[in-house]
Each structure stands twice: as structure tokens, then as C-alpha cells.
Length: 195
Image (cartoon, rainbow, N blue to C red; front, side, top):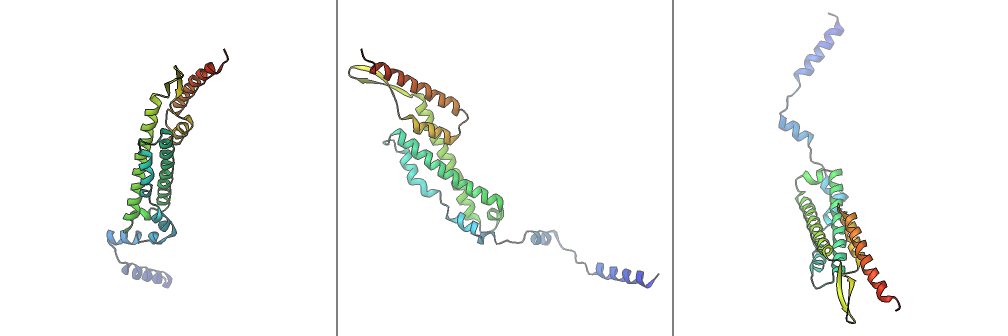
């Protein structure tokens, strides 16, 4: 053996003799070292998002004394705001999963879950209101001793709410509103014609 080969062999022997075997737990701990995700600006911004502050607006939307137009408008507005807040949580936590899976992140996770749940509940309530209104779009009123057809409500907030929810059958619902508008307009034209 040459001295060079002997030197390399000695170096390899010494380096392998110094290798310390580590356990799986130690390896896992090393690989998942705690990051400072909860100290970032993103975490601070998420900590300020509170969906439960919209409960007063939801109470207004649920108030049966208000007009259906008001209720539709308020529900649609609250739904949009809740959806945006939930999206901000989802986007931030998908970019940085440590925000959801580190010790101390329970507050952010709970806030996110509250937003998601409120968004889903508000969607269900708004859709129920829309479906209820869609049952009867045109009503009969008595004016001057005559029965005439009239719109149950202003159709603009109803259309806007349907579009915000992105319902699967929104095209059919919009067509039903169009047909109801034609019924009301035709009756209105017949009344206004000179005799």
C-alpha cells in the first residue's frame, strides 16, 4: 500500500468511528425545528381578523321586521365580508402551514374555524331566504277596486344575492325573475293605456 492510500484509509476509519447515531425522535425534532411563524406580520394581521364582530349585522339580516330587500342586502354584504375573511385565513395558512400547526397557534386556528363556520351558516340562511322569496315573486294587489299583479319586492337585491352566492341554478333563478318582471310590466302597460 502506498502512503497515500494508507492516509485515506486512516481518515475514513477515524471519520466513521466518530459518527453518532441519532434516534428517529431526534431526527424529527431537528427537521421540524420551531419557526417564528407566529411572530410574523402575517400572524399579527390574522390575529386582528374577527368574524364574530359581524354578529350585529347578522341579527339585522335575521330581523323579520325589516323588508326583504334590506334583509337580502345585509345578508349578501355579511356573507361577502365573511367569505373574504375566511379566504385571507386560508391563503395565509396555505402559504405558511406553521401558522396552523405550531404550539400557540390555537387562537388563529379557532378564529379561522369560526369564520369558516359563520360563512357557511350565513350562506345557508341567505340561500333559504332567496328560495323562500322565489316561491312567490308576483303578488296580487287590489287598487281602485281592480286586482293587479305587482312585484313582491325590488328584484335588484334578489339578483345581486343570487350572483354573490354563485348558486348552481342561478341562471334558472334569474330567468324566473325575468319572467316575473314581464308579468308585472305587461299588467302595468295594460293599466296605463288610454281607453
